Image (cartoon, rainbow, N blue to C red; front, side, top):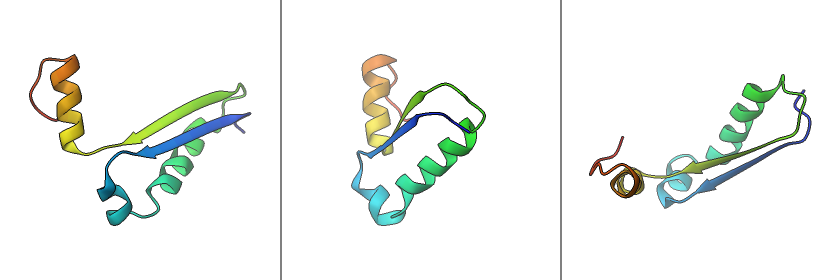
Length: 68
């Protein structure tokens, strides 16, 4: 069992709530399942965004004007 797992889920795009109301719960459950064999405390942050946000990040940090 994961000892002291802290999992934060943040939706930065309103479409996530409209299209998948339980997105945060699904993400937390998936992260806990993936981390279940860890014995040390861990913190995980999951950010749900849209293509426009990813495109901005790619442009700023990778010089690529596209979503990936």
